[in-house]
Length: 302
Image (tube, rainbow, N blue to C red; front, side, top):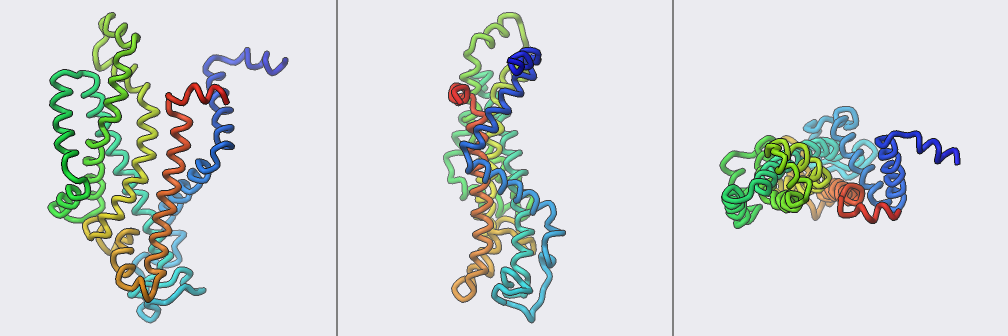
């Protein structure tokens, strides 16, 4: 009884926060993989940020006398053909993956949101022209286009982020556009038009807040995809160039050359890459269950 009286004295905003906090905690209990994914994502960010402290050696510190050493007490994950510590390079590789994942996914979501909102909200000729441009981009194989552009721009961290973000942002803009088209037909949007609200006002006050959960989910999902694509491009020699220890580049160089005789050179970068992407995917699934408006009715039944 006292609890009901306390809740009744809370403001509507406070009750809303309490409601979502309880549902969030209950969802975490029922979605353990989402919790595990969140922990793995935090570990990825922690490792990338504090790589200088966590790594026992420098990322390019060479010890030729210890080249191709198997895992041991001095080098927990072994060394490569130049005597560089594999654990240290995998830790620094987390920083590269974190930068590429966050940078490219952020750029991708910004471009997708801009193209999708403008195209879906204004419609007509604007929608026709923008969607034909999107169709043209999507006609070409994504990996082939990115490799071609990277061969022209040259390998590099910034070039990798820009190429991945721009191409993927254009490709996934249709998801935002479909949500905007659905929201644009609702009555409160028609009422806003009827009272003379400008398009810019409607976009920022009504359209953008309603698609924000989709944008957040897309950001988390795109991050894992960007890490995989960066590893693929680096494996083919067009991504982050040496001496930076990208996980994909490590698999391509010594990992591919010595993988039969010294399998740890390929196992550890591949394991780090797989674990990071698994964690991001599980975390994005959990966020989708929390934030997706289409699951609102299911959440109210929890």
